[in-house]
Image (cartoon, rainbow, N blue to C red; front, side, top):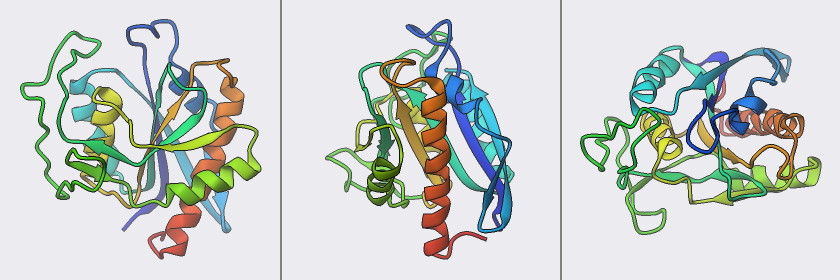
Length: 211
């Protein structure tokens, strides 16, 4: 049974983002609680090291707490929008992490859901949240531009997303944010993330998946 807990993760430093990671800078500004339909949700914010070992350790701990929603956030230096990612792929994880370690195999073994080929041509897991609608609503309400994407990548962003989707695709989302000031401040990104969380809870409530 899901509990009134929302987990939001950002990543720590890595190559090209050694001083600060835009994802964590925005996530850490989120409040500790969110009121939704008269229910109070605790927002737990976690900074995840950019290593496969850390993801393997942290993702099971996240889901052991039975959260109502998990939102992973990462930085993408090549975008100027806030991207809601549809899916994560099961192959192609060849790049060394920030500890200069690689996975033993570039294909990820899934333990929960079966991967499908519905997302592009590569087997993938897909979120069940209605991110098309959520993105459209955010663009009407927020001062930032949101897009839907199928390019989460085959690095730690894709890896943590795949691991969480394998546990529960109903309650998992990954969001890519641009570098700080290109064009949004951390405060602006944080505000959009907060509204995004509300929209995700709306979606879960509409489908009767929110307790």
